[in-house]
Image 1 (cartoon, one colour):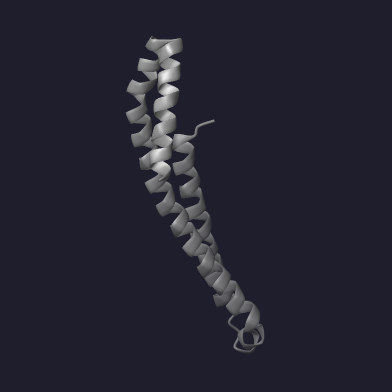
Image 2 (image 1 turned 120 degrees about the vertical axis):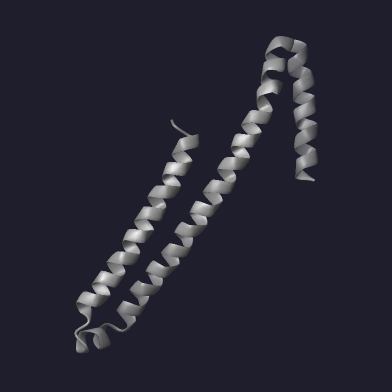
Length: 111
Protein backbone atom coordinates (compact mmCIF):
# COMPACT_ATOMS: atom_id res chain seq x y z
CA UNK A 1 0.00 0.00 0.00
CA UNK A 2 2.80 2.40 0.91
CA UNK A 3 4.62 1.59 -2.33
CA UNK A 4 1.49 2.35 -4.36
CA UNK A 5 0.96 5.64 -2.55
CA UNK A 6 4.57 6.66 -3.16
CA UNK A 7 4.29 5.75 -6.85
CA UNK A 8 1.20 7.96 -7.19
CA UNK A 9 3.06 10.85 -5.55
CA UNK A 10 6.04 10.24 -7.83
CA UNK A 11 3.91 10.26 -10.98
CA UNK A 12 2.04 13.42 -9.96
CA UNK A 13 5.29 15.18 -9.02
CA UNK A 14 6.94 14.09 -12.28
CA UNK A 15 4.05 15.43 -14.36
CA UNK A 16 4.11 18.75 -12.51
CA UNK A 17 7.88 19.10 -12.79
CA UNK A 18 7.76 18.05 -16.44
CA UNK A 19 5.44 20.99 -17.07
CA UNK A 20 7.94 23.38 -15.49
CA UNK A 21 11.15 22.14 -17.13
CA UNK A 22 11.18 18.92 -19.15
CA UNK A 23 14.98 18.74 -19.47
CA UNK A 24 15.56 18.73 -15.72
CA UNK A 25 12.74 16.25 -15.28
CA UNK A 26 14.34 13.82 -17.71
CA UNK A 27 17.69 14.13 -15.97
CA UNK A 28 16.04 13.44 -12.61
CA UNK A 29 14.05 10.47 -13.88
CA UNK A 30 17.08 8.92 -15.60
CA UNK A 31 19.24 9.11 -12.46
CA UNK A 32 16.50 7.80 -10.18
CA UNK A 33 17.17 4.05 -10.75
CA UNK A 34 20.84 4.48 -9.79
CA UNK A 35 19.83 6.29 -6.61
CA UNK A 36 17.31 3.54 -5.82
CA UNK A 37 19.95 0.83 -6.27
CA UNK A 38 22.35 2.68 -3.96
CA UNK A 39 19.62 3.16 -1.35
CA UNK A 40 18.70 -0.53 -1.36
CA UNK A 41 22.37 -1.53 -1.14
CA UNK A 42 22.90 0.84 1.81
CA UNK A 43 19.84 -0.48 3.58
CA UNK A 44 21.02 -4.09 3.31
CA UNK A 45 24.56 -3.33 4.47
CA UNK A 46 23.56 -1.04 7.30
CA UNK A 47 20.88 -3.43 8.59
CA UNK A 48 23.43 -6.25 8.83
CA UNK A 49 25.97 -3.99 10.54
CA UNK A 50 23.46 -2.57 13.02
CA UNK A 51 22.15 -6.04 13.83
CA UNK A 52 25.67 -7.30 14.57
CA UNK A 53 26.35 -4.24 16.74
CA UNK A 54 23.07 -4.72 18.58
CA UNK A 55 23.81 -8.39 19.25
CA UNK A 56 27.25 -7.44 20.52
CA UNK A 57 25.74 -4.83 22.87
CA UNK A 58 23.54 -7.59 24.30
CA UNK A 59 26.61 -9.74 24.95
CA UNK A 60 28.44 -6.80 26.50
CA UNK A 61 25.51 -5.97 28.78
CA UNK A 62 25.12 -9.62 29.76
CA UNK A 63 28.81 -9.85 30.64
CA UNK A 64 28.57 -6.69 32.74
CA UNK A 65 25.41 -7.94 34.46
CA UNK A 66 27.01 -11.30 35.26
CA UNK A 67 30.05 -9.55 36.71
CA UNK A 68 27.97 -7.16 38.79
CA UNK A 69 25.65 -9.82 40.14
CA UNK A 70 28.49 -12.23 40.92
CA UNK A 71 31.07 -9.75 42.15
CA UNK A 72 31.50 -11.53 45.50
CA UNK A 73 32.07 -14.89 43.82
CA UNK A 74 34.55 -13.35 41.39
CA UNK A 75 36.47 -11.74 44.24
CA UNK A 76 36.36 -14.91 46.32
CA UNK A 77 37.78 -16.97 43.47
CA UNK A 78 40.28 -14.23 42.54
CA UNK A 79 39.07 -14.04 38.94
CA UNK A 80 38.94 -10.26 38.65
CA UNK A 81 41.68 -10.13 36.03
CA UNK A 82 39.99 -12.79 33.90
CA UNK A 83 36.60 -11.08 34.12
CA UNK A 84 38.10 -7.68 33.29
CA UNK A 85 39.85 -9.14 30.24
CA UNK A 86 36.63 -10.86 29.19
CA UNK A 87 34.70 -7.60 29.48
CA UNK A 88 37.38 -5.65 27.62
CA UNK A 89 37.35 -8.22 24.82
CA UNK A 90 33.57 -7.88 24.44
CA UNK A 91 33.86 -4.10 24.63
CA UNK A 92 36.50 -4.04 21.89
CA UNK A 93 34.22 -6.14 19.65
CA UNK A 94 31.40 -3.71 20.37
CA UNK A 95 33.60 -0.75 19.47
CA UNK A 96 34.81 -2.41 16.25
CA UNK A 97 31.26 -3.23 15.13
CA UNK A 98 30.07 0.31 15.84
CA UNK A 99 33.00 1.74 13.87
CA UNK A 100 32.19 -0.67 11.02
CA UNK A 101 28.55 0.43 10.89
CA UNK A 102 29.60 4.09 11.02
CA UNK A 103 32.02 3.56 8.13
CA UNK A 104 29.30 1.93 6.04
CA UNK A 105 26.93 4.79 6.79
CA UNK A 106 29.57 7.43 6.06
CA UNK A 107 30.35 5.83 2.68
CA UNK A 108 26.88 6.79 1.52
CA UNK A 109 26.51 9.98 3.55
CA UNK A 110 29.81 11.80 3.31
CA UNK A 111 28.64 15.15 4.68
